[in-house]
Length: 285
Image 1 (cartoon, rainbow, N blue to C red):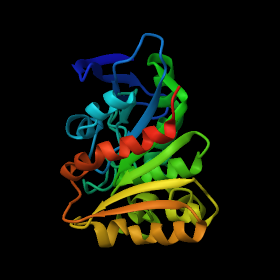
Image 2 (cartoon, one colour):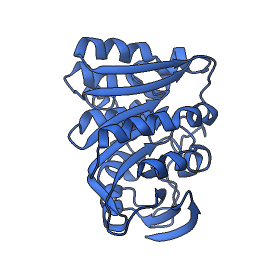
Image 3 (cartoon, rainbow, N blue to C red):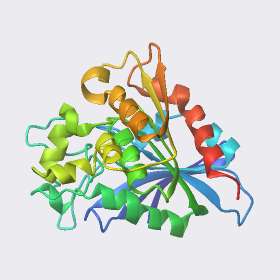
């Protein structure tokens, strides 16, 4: 693991790191904020999954999470959204053939692709649930018994599906403007077909609403959604998550934020609220 940068912030350290990933066969970059803490203390970890076109840098630079993390004693980890390349042989990583923003580079959708040419490198599910947690556990003062997960848009989809699939690992799950039912939305349909092929069962394993319909449970979910979000009606559709949670008996807090859009102005406004919600569920050491 190579340290790309390290900056003191709110008494802690904001670092950016690069490593050779076995999951993707490429170098991967991620950021970690470690708040001030007593030597030897293990701290809970909040994972943040970013949205389409993003890298680790978007939330790191614009998310405004460090003050709350320093106050609450939370490590904040932000991985990239897809492999970037080149791979071990120096070859480029496959991208959308038309160069579209909603598939390929920057749009890994947090699945392990099974379809050529993406299966070779697009293994973001394994990366964020297995490889990167092991790396964080080995190199940072992380209490891996106290993890939670959150995300935005495509990353909100990732946070919901990861949290619903691994409920014993993640003590809290929240999202900003998530794609709640990718199997019923254009972004998701394109990504799931391109990465997983025509396999309805595989699609359902990466669809929060379908997972809940199929029996996945967590005690509670927190979702914030801006009412002025351009993607609200076609791509995000929070009403589908609300209906699924009501049927399943999952305690969903769905905050519709009047006038807010899809941007980091929206996310940063409510980031501290989410982190406090996570901290309450992560508990004390």
